[in-house]
Image (tube, rainbow, N blue to C red; front, side, top):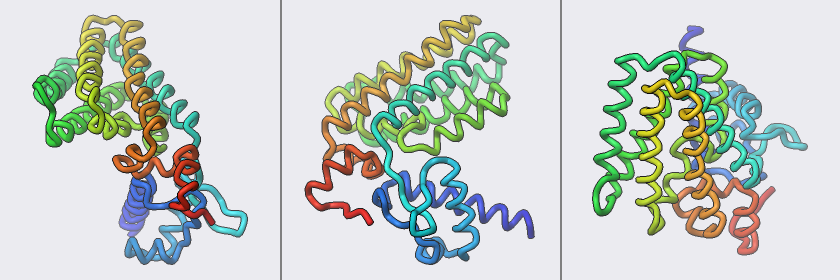
Length: 258
């Protein structure tokens, strides 16, 4: 019974986090337990516990009237999270370079990058190509972290992944909306190849620097989203949580805040 309860609890956390990151709630909106429980088809207890977990992650905040409410995020918070992910992933790449890439990890990473090659190395990218690239990108970054076998490093990345637009592929939808998006994706994928090459050659410092350089693409996507807020919210509804976006739309009385 305990395992089943824990499984349900984990599932509710994942479901609520997913709804939040998809922009289902407006900044300042009260997150009432009963409506959420009904929406997810569970009792109030796992919802209450899930909200406490999400507060710990920094996604929601306690309301002055009791319970929880959706919090706002600043562009600076999102930018900081992206850059910190670069530092952490760069460190992971350095660790792997210094301890040596196993034949199995090398095989998995090369297979992964080959899929990325098929997605980006063509005159134009279709929607299916972008989808393939996102799946490949997530797998590549997951492999880097899991191969380190470092509990603390994994926990830090897990926390960053739970924040809006800080995960490896979170900003990629913006690229599919821009003329330069394909070229940016090609550049990002060339860095993937360079990271793997540096790791296989035992070039720890180079691997680390490349990991930090890699997130500059996500930072440019964030800047682009700030310049085109309407387009950003269209492609990534979760951008509603970013205060600058909220301010832009508040002028249109689009998203009332409690």
